[in-house]
Length: 223
Image (cartoon, rainbow, N blue to C red; front, side):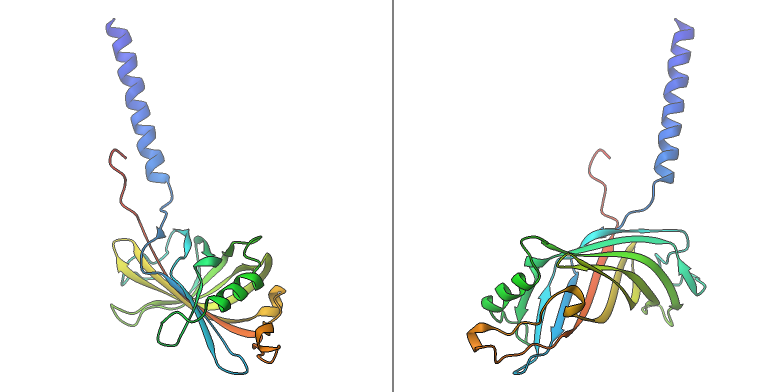
């Protein structure tokens, strides 16, 4: 009986140790937190327009050397990180310059152009992140160049854009970026609303900007 108890205790100890090692080796995952937003800005023959959304899903897994805290020393060059993000198309809404809702009709035209029923999400997969400059102060951001695949209306293009990574403390980050793309590169014909007899022409180029807040979510009770 004593031998059996010793074997059981030894087995339990080994399992606990293995479990601890697996937990230690598990990659850190940062998930979306409140405070994210995306903005699309464009032009037309009558006025500029803007669309905003406050939902950016996905996750980020920082690798060795990725800046998680302010003041972390980091040499310029490629940084190890995995990131995938998505924006629900129907979370995007047209707005006035002061932020008030603009037009449900414009929203419906946008959803149609983005083929929302077949492709309900705009997707982004990060391929490479290269640091360009370290922060100049405690409350400033790391500057990077990001290259990745953007999928809009089912069409994929590789894009490069400058991004910043600002540490908010406690494994919480705000990642921001801005770039210009053309609708036609994603197979989207710039809208010319029929309700205006096609007299309103929308510019092909649009500017995309975002602020993505991610962090380590608290563990559920019992985990």
